Every structure is written in structure tokens, then in C-alpha cells.
Length: 277
Image (cartoon, rainbow, N blue to C red):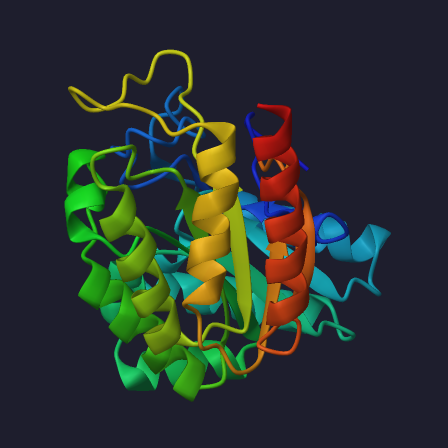
């Protein structure tokens, strides 16, 4: 496999075979994300991708899970993405699923017919970065998406049988937009009803300055923010994880089944931090 570093994939794709069908991210303007800032976005030559698929199937024909990289692979032209999926389905007879990063706009730009075809070709999990349900927060961090587009895209994808994994960033609203970030993020998630939800904490990265006058929240406030978001969630069947290394308190569970347990753990941690301070 010919990878151009860095190669990113969600934690759940640790056992997946990765094909890099594009380099970098077609958007790459978000001030909270440093994943592809050193990479110029470009599509790979199709013949290279097909050659790697052929080679990989000779070495591991029983592959079941595949992840297509890099950022927002759903933004590839429909016909091109179809050709890749058709080749992968043909090469790996035991294939169960192909997963990708996706943005709300790239999902919305595919017609219902196109999405249906992609799903039939075993495109399965779409990893979508909501980050915040506040449009004001997204705008100051240069995320070129609208909250409403992302909500509509996840709802549409779920109706067609896709599994949607949505990510939010704790603390992204800073001190000034903290309450708006909490309430609108919970509201957006309630409308989306994603099957998977991941909460990470926003951490300022070297070389990526935050918006002007931005004031970060404290560790206590990050835990408090997660608690308040969970308290306002009305999710029916969502696997929830906040176990990324950026989180001050690792958590995992199912919502809404485990909501009371998660809230209790957060309340205990908050009381412990308050007592120490």
C-alpha cells in the first residue's frame, strides 16, 4: 500500500483495511482541525487505487471492513466513488462494509438515487463532524458547513440505511458562546438521532490560532459542559463515547438507556473537582 502521511482514521477503524483514494481534505479551512494542514488536496489516479485493490485482495482476500481515506471521501464525484466501491466489492467476497469521513454538504450533494446506489455497494458508516450545533461557533472557526445542512444530511442518510457517527467538540464555544454551544448542540443531536456519538474536547493546536478574543473553558467546565449536553439529549438508540485522550473523564454508554448512570458519574467527578479546589 502506498500511503502519503499523515493517514487518519476513526478509532473504530483500527482493524479496517485503508485505501487512500484522495490526499488531504477538500475543505481544510477549519481552525480547530490540524489533520491535513500540511497536505495539498488532490484525488489519486484511479489506476493507482485499482492496482492497490488488486494487490490487497491477493494478500488478504477475506477482508471484511474497509475505510476509504482521506477527509470527506463522500465529496468524490458519484461515478468515481461507485467505481471504487464496485471494484472493492468484486475483490473482497466477504466484504461487509466500507466506511468514510463525510460532511453534511457532501451527503446533501448526492441525490437520493445516488445515495441508494452507494448504500447498495456496502458504503455503510458516515463519520460526520458536527462539532457544534451553534452556527455562530462554526462560523468563527471557519467550518464551511451549516448546522441545518448537517442535520438534514444525517436524517436523510439514516433513512436510506446508512449508519451515522457524529462528533462534537466540547469547549468549542469558549466562554462567550458556551451556553449557546451546549443548548444548540444538544438540540441538533436530538434532531439527528445518530446511531453513534463521539464527544472530544477542543484543544488549541500549534499553528492554529483560535478566533480573536477567544477564551478557553477550564477542565471543570469541560466536564460540566458534557454533563449539560447529556442532560439535554433525548436520543433513542445511540452508542455514546467520550473516551478520546482529549477528554478529562473517559465515558461510554448507550443513550438514552445509560443517561442516568453517565450523569451520576459526571456529577461525582464535578463534586470531587470542586472539593479539591
